[in-house]
Image (cartoon, rainbow, N blue to C red; front, side, top):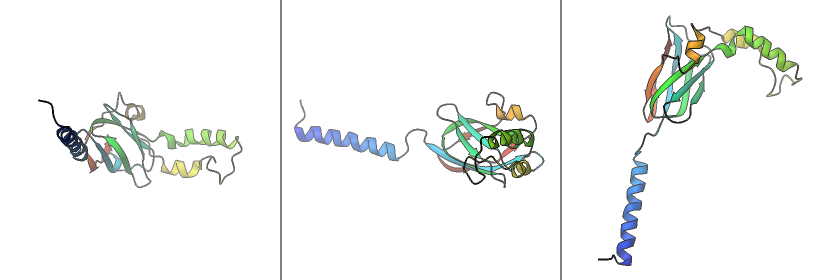
Length: 158
């Protein structure tokens, strides 16, 4: 028996309501905001560098490590992730060369394109053991399962 026009409208409204309810209730993986501190096994907090959350599916999410060792990664896809950590971007041996190269470009000191101050960056450099291991997603032993919503996850480098 065919539905009347009102019956068809009710059917579509019901399907629409169900779709909206599933979307609002978070059916699916969702995303999380992960915050924490990055430190060495001996308790020394990193003073800079980068953390990257690499999900099995979806986009990688980077986060800067602050001078206090804290980071916040927003919109990380929920599910298992591999975490990479690097501090080599602050390594004085590498920063000095990069800063000199950028300075040759002639950017004014107050320009957003100005070379980084090697002394301040070097002061934040905390070397991590086996930096290539922790910076490479295929070698990093750092694993975590992100859940939907805000969460805390401290990262310890062995």
